[in-house]
Length: 170
Image 1 (cartoon, rainbow, N blue to C red):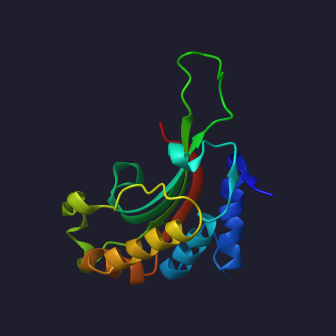
Image 2: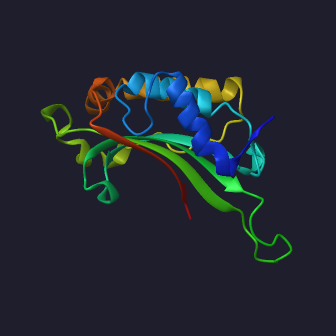
């Protein structure tokens, strides 16, 4: 049985706990990434099909105004929600919602110029279907991160805080 999209943050929190992590105090990026890989392979109800970009994910890094410009990694799963609003309305569009796990880090010389990496703050959203194609893209992301010294240093560091939430993306 699939999880409804509104319940997906609780599902991700449960997966994080199974990986030995507190969703509000993640202290290991590798285990968080493993949990995220598991989370993005779970079927979700109430969203558009994969071929309509109904279920995507991205790993991002940088400094953002909404987190006080702290160095951060974010693992995001985004849904195009099909069970909200009036589908009979000629202007109906699916709503975009995101489940985000943000990991925050103390400033360190290893990623001092992280904000200058704007041209490469992610590999972009991926909408491959659940299964081997999605697993292959997750592996490519991890390989790509290793080519970025600042991000790979952050990946090996201990976060000083984390936040897991569900937010409207559009």
